Image 1 (cartoon, rainbow, N blue to C red):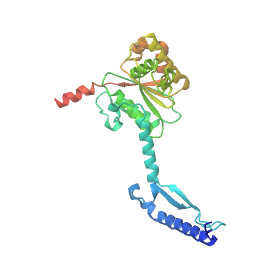
Image 2: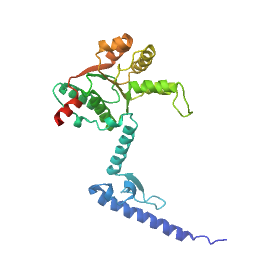
Image 3: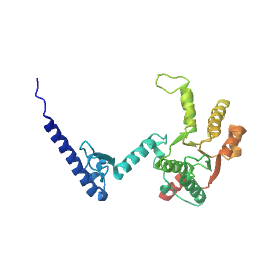
Image 4: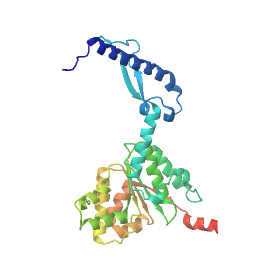
Length: 277
């Protein structure tokens, strides 16, 4: 049988560990307040040792009260990683991933839309139920503004999704003939419209208005309407034009759900081509 370690040896090792922890906690107290960032961190992953009670360092067992806490640099890094993870899963197409308020080209006709969008984003909170209806011609910047709102609210810790209506309808159609067990069911795809956070519904009214399309969109809009979920719609069509395509019951709900935002500008893609000519 192996030799049993003497109790005094165990106590010495225990005390050595405690003093080592106390020494590191004192070091953290000295260096952490002026630390410029995680790349200079002297502790593992920004988890610094902290003396829990400076006025009672020792408990009845002779142990130092030492805990580990994340520094503000580590917390900031984790928050950024969380934001980027949600952004990656937001459904925003790659081409529009860089849309931000700071990168929006404010030309004549877009000033009010820009200010309304930014104000909505800044005021957004967990109690927000009202949405926006961006109306503008192709290339006017309405999608850029709606995604800028989405990015801002995600950065503030809220959840949001981007849904392009024609592609959503295509996914529903594809779900009718599932080839693989792990493919989403029709109900799962349809429920994307009922995302619990802010939903940007892009390009509504651009699809062929068959009875099936009308019904799918009505079910989605009605679901968000009854649940009072915040929704941003973008469209090339006025409410009157949209009503002729999707029906009165759908559009009446959208009007009640949203404040209108008119984006009046020429196609920015053509403007850029003109500038480079």
